[in-house]
Amino acid sequence: MKRVIIGDVHGCTDELCALLDKLDLCAGDWVCFAGDVIDKGPDAVGTVARIMALRNQGVTVELVLGNHEWKFLRYMAGRKVRVCDEFIPLKDHCENDTTMHEFLLDAKLYVSMFNRDRPRFPGIVVHAGFPPDLKALPRAFTAREMLVMKPRDLRGANRVTFCRYVNPDGHAVQLGSETDNDVYWASTYNARFKHAFFGHQPFMPDVDKPWPTIIEAKQFPNATGLDLGCVFGGYLCAAVIDMYNTVSFVTVKAQQKYAAHYREEQPEQAARFPTI
Ligand SMILES: [Mn+2]
Image (cartoon, rainbow, N blue to C red; front, side):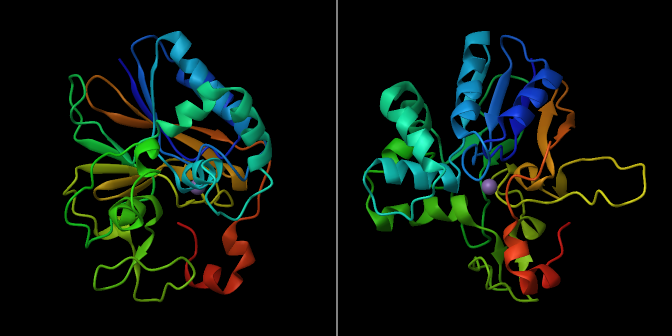
């Protein structure tokens, strides 16, 4: 029985299919997507369809809510969001195929791995992370539940879907306003909610390094970043946990660069926070 966690796919269906071929999943295996399976990339509909099709193989599939699914689902619920062009094909598809919309609505704020079948793994899958001042986990709400919650009740939930850098006081810093004193949340995370597998932050592997280049997830003492920037021309990455609770990584190189990295749009930030 394999347990697999996959980082941000962002509509890169070809790379997802190649990764799933490499993973060679069987009935009884468990796969959890760390969120942001849609947007930015070429084919959100194909990606979600491929993920849903895993269930026909007897694979248990779970989806953690990424900030991009959250934005899309709020848009579908008639909320005011800045509409992205890439929402349109997915919106059209979801209107005709309610099972895809339902699948996305079932996305959870996080997925605990510890309560699953043996061998238990002391891990948790979350999209963005756990800021130091988040003392207790919110409930593992589904997106469907979150859509009917009051904004004030969503505060804790939003924090684990959006968190990146944190300041020395342990408070999350807004994207783009990081200073030299701020650190990535995972570097000081103390495992209070168990080992965290997360996406959200594209850690671009340094492919210009001389060989041998071993492409692995970005490892922190108590957390593992699985987004290796596939949609930005990096890699799609899966963590695979075997029956002895040994973790290994499987990666697929992106066939092309599908989107511009936000750091390229903000060069002054890129200079201060080089990737990896
Ligand atoms: Mn993402």
